[in-house]
Length: 300
Image (tube, rainbow, N blue to C red; front, top):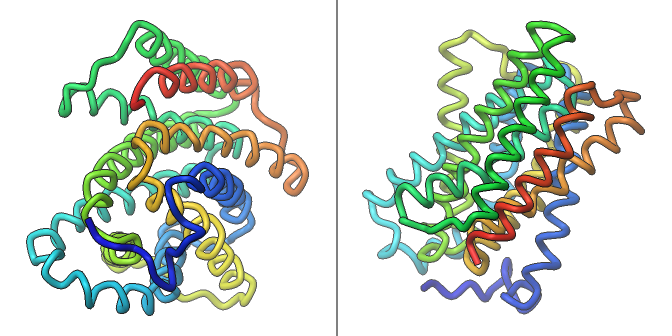
């Protein structure tokens, strides 16, 4: 196991402080939806810029740690991390795209269902056992998701597509979190985050090139939004979650994001004057209760 004491992870970052940093990460990721909504750029461009700027900030820390890990991170492992990066790229692409079609409240609730997929994959691949309360929580969360989608279906067909994109983003987030928990036990945070973010950005840039999408933007405010996404939700949010995967089970890390729908919805009301849709108001609480039951009874 690599020693992470150094300029990036020092005495402030250890097992005893992990819960505090999870709260900070939760607050940081809650701003993502609002920043994305404020941007006029293409969803793929937003995701790519967010990752590239975060990687530029991580670069000096990656160089510092990679010198110690050259023998740990071989060619095979480097390309395996590419699969993790692919999952992250698809997650961002689907989730950010969903904001163009549905409300903040609906999107963040549905994308937060990834603990269900983490638990389901853990049962299938790692033979993790679920008790009756966890199974009941999964059924409840899925029922709540159905109510949310059904309620929002009365708004428009486009809203349905947006909700399904957010749900697809949740599946990819579950894969990303589970895969990350495996590699984070062997690789330092700076090396892991830099390589995965780099792969994710590369996949997004390929999609942008194929799609003929404008990557460079003219409005300076767009770059300020990209920078805020990189520093806040990406580094203070996702990167702290990646760090926590070394000390906390993936299911518990996954469920800590339950605070994101609440924070994002409140910010959407205050900043965007966007009230939750009928589906989110009816199904949202049911989803969150179900996810809580899953987390409470798995990954201890």
